[in-house]
Image (cartoon, rainbow, N blue to C red):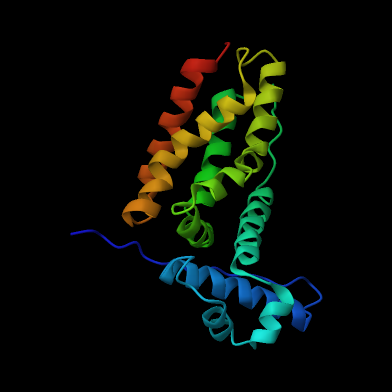
Length: 214
């Protein structure tokens, strides 16, 4: 029996002005996330999204002219949330493994959060059917903070010469394999604290076994 993934809701916040147009836009994107998760991108309709957001079709089309533009807005929201993660500057006076664990813990917290899981499922409802769309998404934007840290650590002599972009994706890939994809593909619950610690520690250990220059 195939285990169904638990659908997550996502909370959007309008800007500090609290304008009605911003609130309606947030409601529309939130409704699109839910509809894409529930029905899939291709089965979801603009009419259904308008109903779910409690807005008129005119209001919906004033903000978004198609499901494709809503998909783009969801990708932008994922990017924005990723960019809000704290930037970690490499500190040569501190243990490298400890700093990598902090980066990893923040990343695991991010990718297992309800909001990110909901946004990711909504996006995947399209890209799994239309892989070309996935190729057009700049996945590197989600690794910028990791790349920046690795560049600094490498410049200090703590890491070997390496392809920074590739290494950053390796690091994230280790974390996502055990923390993100089981939730997305198998409907598993978020990892327990003990499991998170295991994921973080083993990922950092494996990464340093390959790239540590110390």
